[in-house]
Length: 360
Image 1 (tube, rainbow, N blue to C red):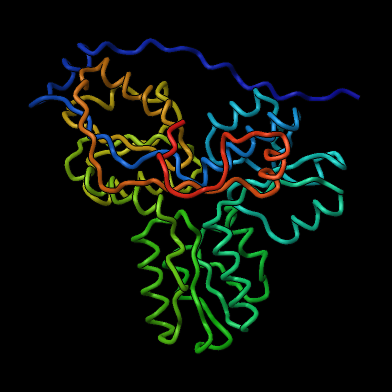
Image 2: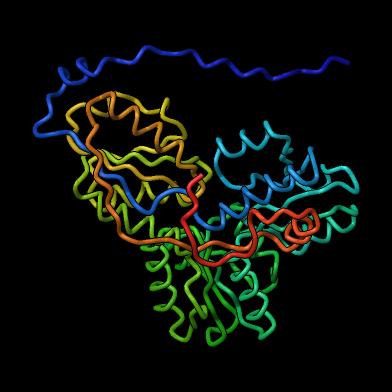
């Protein structure tokens, strides 16, 4: 029996238009410059998850299986694959008795049980801020609250949180969903959220929910993570000044997609998202004096630097960093991995705390 193999078409290199051709097409008034968002790129949860896979490969050897993408970034996934990581959709694809890493987005109890049933050794690289939301869901469910989980249907983080208490959770995908929402007891309702949403859209949803369910209570602390909030705050500062905003990040990265949306909402004339510098279309620079540049929370700095190099080629060599917050949080590596590192005498990364912002 023959097997059909799907071979994608190879990428054909294209010849870029020259900087002079771009300048002639639409002259720019004033000096060209880049407004570079800070903070940008890797957050503590992503840093922790990527290092967890790297350390697992180093101490256990390849292959190390990873359920789903460890973080939502093509470059990171491809780089880890080259080092011996094997990304799978579900645990039943992992050979029995093997090592599997759970991604930063978290997993449901059913996934944990599936791994146990297959006698898999696990490293849980779930972001601690996602774990916090899981624990909130469990606690409110035990107290018989109906949980309105604001998040995107199909996103791995939402699936994991929903799986903690499926009988008590309804997913609210957008502000418009509130109109048709029904609950059993309007006096026992709480809202939680995915950690990587648009701050503004989430609050719009919360306001609509509160108008419909006045006795709804808030989570004990903000569920949207500090990195998501900080990156959105930085681009809000830059967007009104920018003719073009470039967001480096993958299409399946919720926080990267939100950054592009926020840039447009806050006044950028144009905003585009790219995975790599070679996806930037130089025609976007026509008539552009100021370019805003940021990156999602799962994007290594090397990808931003490659975009900066391209921008410099087209006359945007002046770079002004717009700093709206300082980040110095580091998370501990997963406990399963810390034990292995301690046994092997590896002291290169211990407990978390505050230190230098990750900059891979």
